[in-house]
Length: 459
Image 1 (cartoon, rainbow, N blue to C red):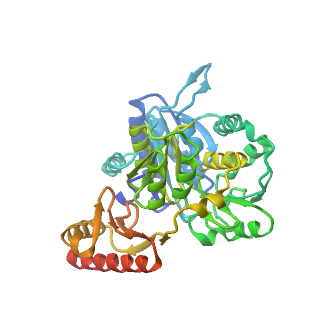
Image 2 (cartoon, helix red, strand yellow):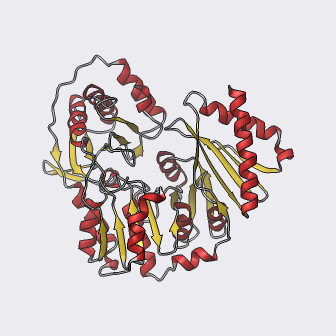
C-alpha cells in the first residue's frame, strides 16, 4: 500500500488501492494533524466518477478526528488552495480553514484518484506523506464509522468573485479565444468567470465527465490538443487547455505552443526586478532571459517543492515546463492555471505580442521529456551512479558544470542534458537542449551512453 503515498500527493486506483478502509484512515490521521493547527478543513473534489464516494469516506475519517468539515463540492484544485487563504461564515462567525484536501486524480487515467493536501497554508508532502502512509498501514485494523456530516460552503462562488474583481478591467475583451477543459473540473470555474466578465470564447468539453470521453485531460501531450488546434485553424487566435483538475495550463497561438518556462519569462517582463524560480527541466533561455532583468533560481521539480521555495525566497513567480505556474505577484503563491490564463489575457489586452516576442528569443533545439523505464528500487541508485561517473569524466566529456539539485543537469559549452528519477513512477526522466541539431544529437548520445553505463553498474 505504501506506493500510493507519493512525493507530492496520494494517488492510486479507486477500489483496489483507494479502498473505504484506507481512505477513512487517511482522513482520520490527516485530521489529527489538522487539529494541531485548527478545527476546520475544506474538502472538495474533481470530476471523476468516484470522487463523491471518496469524499464520503474521507469526511468520515476527518469527523472521527473531530475536524469540522467545510465542503465545497466539485471544483478545480486551485479553488481548494484558494480556500486556505480566505475565511468563511460559519455559525455567525468568520472561520479560517486549517487545512484543505482536494480529491483528484489530476491527469491520470479515469480509474485513478487521490488527494492533494494543504495544512497551515503549506503543502503537505514528502516525508510528511510517507509518515502518514506508515501510520495508516500500522493501524489497518482500525474501524471508522461512516459519518458524512459537513458544512456546505460556496467555495466556487468565492473564487469566481475574487477573480472577477481582480480582472474587472478585462470586461468585454474579445481576443478570439478557444478553451478546452477536457471534461475535467476547470470548466465549472472558467464558465461563470467568462460570463461575469463578458469574455466570449469557443468552449470545448466544459462539461465535467470523469470518463473523459473526448480526450485525456493532459495538455502537456500534443495529441490531446488536436481539437483545440482545429479551432485555431478555423478562426480562433489563441487557445487554452487545462488538465483534469485545473492546475496546469497550455497556451497556444496559431503558430506556437508556449511551454511553462517560456510563459514564465514573458510573465517576468511584466514585473519590476523579478525573482523567478524554475525547475531543472526549464530552458536555458528562461534562466538567461530572467537574469537579464532580475534573478532566476533553479530548483527541484514538483509543485510542492516550488510552493515551499516560493514562500522561502519571497520570489514573484515559479514555473514548471509542464504548465504549473505559481504567482506570488498579486496572488497567493500556488499553482493556478485559471489565474494564469487571466494574466495572459491581461498581457494580450495590454498589447503583448506573444508570437513576435517568441521569435526574438535565441534559437535553441530541445526535446520534450523522454522517459527511460527502470524500477522504483533502482531509479535513484542509477542517478547516483551517473553523478559519480560524470564527475570522474568531466574533462573527458567537455562538461562545464554539473547541477545536482534534482537529479543531474549536465551543462556543456553548447547545451545541456538532464537525468532525474521520477518521484511518482518507475522511470528516469531525461531532457536535452542545445544550440544546434548536431549538438543536440551529440549531447543526447553522450548522456544516453552514460545512463546505460550507470544502469549496468547498478545491476
